[in-house]
Length: 320
Image 1 (cartoon, rainbow, N blue to C red):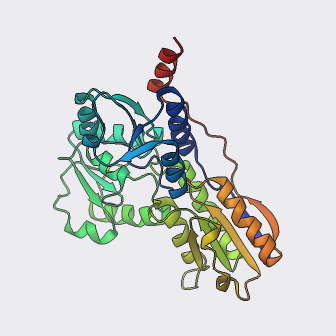
Image 2: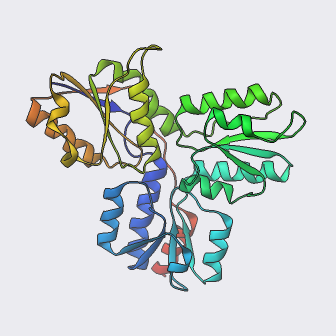
Image 3: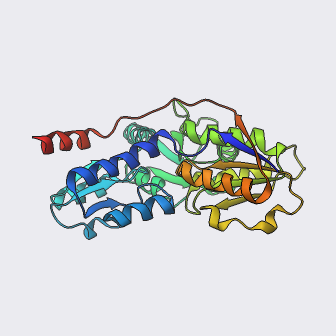
């Protein structure tokens, strides 16, 4: 069996930064260390931190007063920050800088009197945090069909922003529908969908036609991982079937029945999936199916983000 190993895959700069933030905070603060929402959407990462004494919470009210709390890579609303400060908490913000960029855009456009159409998935942690920046000025749009129900006129000031982990194709379809109804719509100065999401989707779109099956390593609640499976299944010329795709957390979820008569498999990973899980799956394919690995690089990445200033200040204080 030919095993195509997609590159880029797995951890992006924002996820690397967020995970390192929690690792360093455990060393500095000790445990229990509180993290608001899952630090990244990956079961193995979260379970690993829980074993170390990290406590993940969905409400700031569950964080003891004067404790240290880390905000996840997906960002939080100003209200969550304020609630944490009122409890006397020490705040460490591990929000991905590319998510922060969307927050700042939302705040700026709301102050300028725009109504913001936020293209994204309602209820996703990132979207909830962005909406919290200007709740009275933001409408979530999840599909082209949502555009017909919008109450705005051709005279209204409208701008669109997007969740950073969307499918580029899906976002473009929604943007086209917005432009058709509201030709006056303003677009963000730069693309909101992050480089890592775009690159991983580009790799799957390019490589999946070479495979008979695609394995995406990632958790079910990882938006960007789910999008990779959808892209594989829809890649190729219009009207033609794409490549079957499976989303798996780890090698234990591999089903041998998937590989009947399959001679080529593409393996990739969502931006929150650890590389050791990818390698375990590749090794299983090598061992069980006499797999021959081919590394397929579509885009090179060299992005990195600094650890949060608040963490570095905390580290300096503890050293003194």
